[in-house]
Image 1 (cartoon, rainbow, N blue to C red):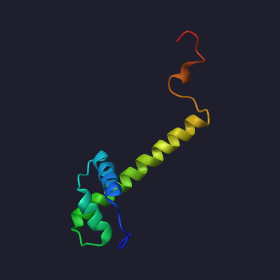
Image 2 (image 1 turned 60 degrees about the horizontal axis):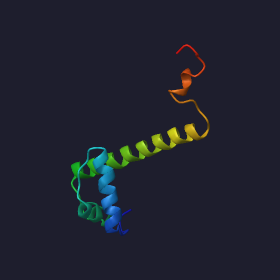
Image 3 (image 1 turned 90 degrees about the vertical axis):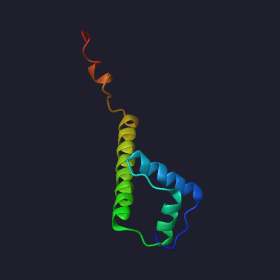
Length: 85
């Protein structure tokens, strides 16, 4: 990813995604990281954690959506077979 440009909007989007998993950083700092500016190990670790956590969340949401699209039962519909419930 070094050497690639990251626009202001995309940097803000990445910062919002990081904030959802508890990592606060500024868009300007994300742009600098992508541009190849040296970063501290703890800062790199925090941002790397945030990117991994957002990817896991995205995959989890996609799997959940895929399950609903395939007709998998939801929690509320799993008791539909019991007429006394």
